[in-house]
Structure formats: structure tokens, C-alpha cells
Amino acid sequence: MRKSIRNNSFLYGIICLYRYVRYRRQYDRLDKDLNILDIRQTLDYLATHEVSLARFGDSELRMLFKKYSIGFQEYDPRLATRLHEIVDNPRNSEVLMVALPHYLVGTEDAKFDIKTAWWSMLTHNYSSIRQNLNPNLTYLDAEVSRTYSEYRDSAITAKAYAVFKKIWQNKKVLIVEGDKTRMGIGNDLFAGAADLKRILVPRENAFERYEQIKQLVEEKDAEYKFDLVIAAIGPTATVLAYDLSPQIQVLDLGHLDIQYEYYRRHSKKMTQIKGKYTNEVNMTADDIYRNDDEYLSQIIGRVE
Image (cartoon, rainbow, N blue to C red; front, side, top):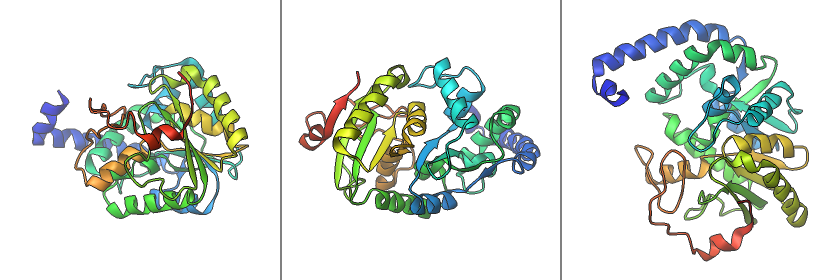
């Protein structure tokens, strides 16, 4: 249905105009309530502040507002409660920054299809946004790990990867990721890290194993003394960053690696990357990294 509408340029244009008119009516009020740094300000902030990052993308926001499941995480009332806790009881900003999509207050830098999707999202959830989000906080931009697919200016993506590579330059890094996500395998995203280890967790419904995941990360951090943890496990990463931020820097960076693959390939759309799983595009049958020695040597723990 959506595809047929998009193929009808006149009808699609009318729908987009309707979304924009409704969005503008509500944006003028919401912009005064929320302080969300734009993508450039967010990158500058992360480059100069050693803080943890907990991101609320559209999926996490919808879980705040209603019983909402996503492709790799079924709705869990315990998860929804934890997400509310992060918003309602924020950490000190010197320890943790919460990130919301800057699209809630402006879509000027976004690609057109991203703009229209967020115009619709905002108009359908305006009351929930006002009721659930704290207007007294400063937020970063949650799309910081998805810049290639979402922002028009390629310079933003170039800057994003330069900033992140510098953050983990010469650091001991632990990646907590879904099975077969394989961040940094087959590319140079973490080439500058002093050491790289991995904990693999279920790529679907990871929150069901949250306590085991958290405990294992804490045990391995005590053993290896990591400088930085990078989590790519959907909404579970948001909670993990919040819980561990008082003791170690945790960056919730789902999609960062797969976006880097698209960026390197100059991909026009999301596509399959051999040997890597993402919830948006399933992994191909060609699992080329299954027996990769470098990858296997980095795995120091698993949660099944």
C-alpha cells in the first residue's frame, strides 16, 4: 500500500503536505519545550566530554508512550518502566547524556523521506511527547549513530566517524552486541583502539537476559579494566548505558557499524552486508565471518 502511494507522486505529495502542515502547527509549541542539540552540536559535545550516551530513537519513544514492539524486541513492561526511569530520573550530565531525535524540534538537515516520517510521528504522538519528556534537560541528538541514512550533508557523516574514531583511539574497548552484529569486522572502524573485546548476546529480545548481560559486563570490566563500553543491542543498550554510567563510559551506538558499511560503499539504500545482521536488513546466507580468527579471538563472553 505504502509503495503504491509513493509511486503516485501527486497523492504522495498531498500526503506529505498534509503531514507538514500538521507538523508545523505542533512544532512551534514543542520547539519551545525541548532543548535538543542538533547533530553538529552533538558531535562537538561528544568530542569534548567523556560521558556515557543513552539514545531514545523512535522505537524507544514509542515504548514510552504505549505497548509497542519492534522487530527484534517484543514489548516488555519491565523495559518500558526502565525507559521511563531514565527519562524521569536522569543521571548527572557529567556522567550520562540522554539523546532524543533532533527531528522532534527540527527536520531541516534530514533527507526528505526521513522528514515526512518524522512529521507523521510527531503529529501522532504530540501529546505523549509533551507528557513524557523533560523540558528542563538538554538532550543530544539520538540519530548520531545513523547519520548516513538520515542526513543530507555527507560532511556530517564524515565528521561523525572522525569523532567516534578519536573517542576510542588508543583505548581498551568492550563491544556488547547482538550475535552476528560484528561491529568493526571487515572494516577499519575500530582500527585505532588499543584492544577490542566482545560480549555476544541474543540479537532478538535481549532485555529478557538483561540481568545476565549487565552482570557479565561488570565481571569482564573488573577483569580487563576497559576504558569504554560500546553497546549495540537496541533498547537494552539504553538501559545498560544508564545503569553502568557511574562506573564506566558506555556509548549506546546501535547501527553505527552498518551505517559505516553503507558510507564506505556510497550505498543509495539500506542493503545486505555479507556476514552481518541488522534488524532492518537481514543477513545474507553467506556468513563469511563465522570462522574468522580475529573475530573469534575477541569474544570473551556470551549470554544465550
